[in-house]
Image 1 (cartoon, rainbow, N blue to C red):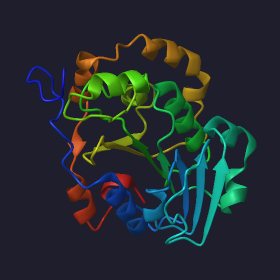
Image 2 (cartoon, rainbow, N blue to C red; image 1 turned 135 degrees about the vertical axis):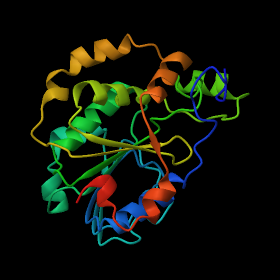
Image 3 (cartoon, one colour; image 1 turned 120 degrees about the vertical axis):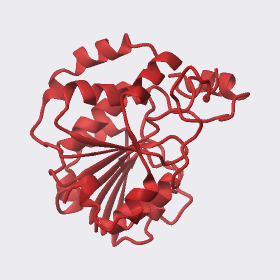
Image 4 (spheres, rainbow, N blue to C red; image 1 turned 90 degrees about the horizontal axis):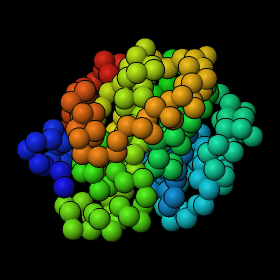
Length: 253
């Protein structure tokens, strides 16, 4: 069943600024000096980011854009994100604490959960973590299997859009981390989840990792469940955010 069915509260589309334009604006407006990107591929988004230092992590880079644009230094780490967090010292690489992060790695919720709590651990309460693909527009793109998603989604309005089930990070954070400030933004193609008020000393998600995985593996990955997720959030216009001179209203200082 495609998005737009009247029995489910899924939006027909995300109608805001494209996520790359939004991220470019946020990186400039917040004067982000140290940036981390998980899941870089060709480097298209990375080329739009304004920062002094960027650390980019991907298990298999296919860089075809100028990722050094608007930056003083870029470090490419060709490794899975779990390896990066286990073996590399972010603060030493970036010469300071993380300001802005974009998480777009493996599209299954347990991977994103690890990327989130590992990123939070190298953050400050001023850091902004942005997660991609967490607001799917139909059940087909949310399939955990990318090949099956492509096969079943080819006849929908969103062919070859694959988010996997990373949408589950939304109810996970609502349940286990109500202390976080979470803004859901209407950036196409598949929304952005922006998280601030971070606590690098929090170990709840890591300590409860297997409990969370078991709990949310049991949560169905279907249109009803995705619809329930949407009923539990309020989506903010990206245009409203980018037109406001005071981004601290949304993302803190």
